[in-house]
Amino acid sequence: MRRMILAVLAAVFVFVPTASMMGQGAPVQPGADQPYKIEYYYKVQWGHQAEFLSLFLKNHYPLLKKIESTGRILSVKIESPTYHTSEELRWDYRVTIVYKNSTVATTSNPDEEAMIKELWPDQETYKKEEQRRFEILLGHIDLPVADVTPR
Image 1 (cartoon, rainbow, N blue to C red):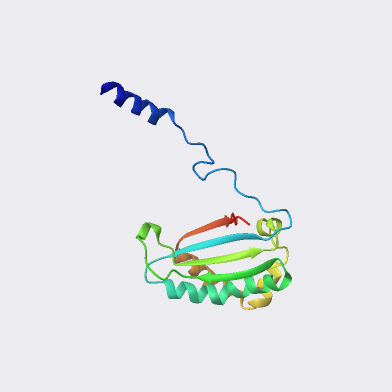
Image 2: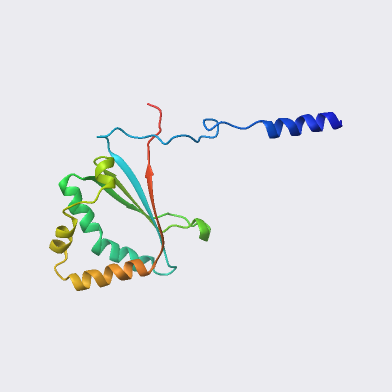
């Protein structure tokens, strides 16, 4: 009996799953000129979700749509969970942006400042509202995602 227990323990401690067995490995990289998707998760101070969404739709969404009109962004989608989770797993809004490619997704847009000034001529109000949007934000995660669905 003791030998069998030792054999089982040895098998448990000797067996090390490979990365492919665990679903881990090098992330799938899209081609250089393929669409590149990033999910942005926002967790807001409890009770301020409507205020955050209102400020986001007023002061950030129009910029995303303006950038989309230039072709740098292919699509923008805003979602909120239907049900609740535990507080540590909670997120209030997910914004999924599909960029033209990884280069435009990961480099600064040289026209963004001009777009902001064009969209919001009252820069004082714009900056104050953007500051408020970030004051009520508890957490923000940028998560590039790759489609690994077999074709």
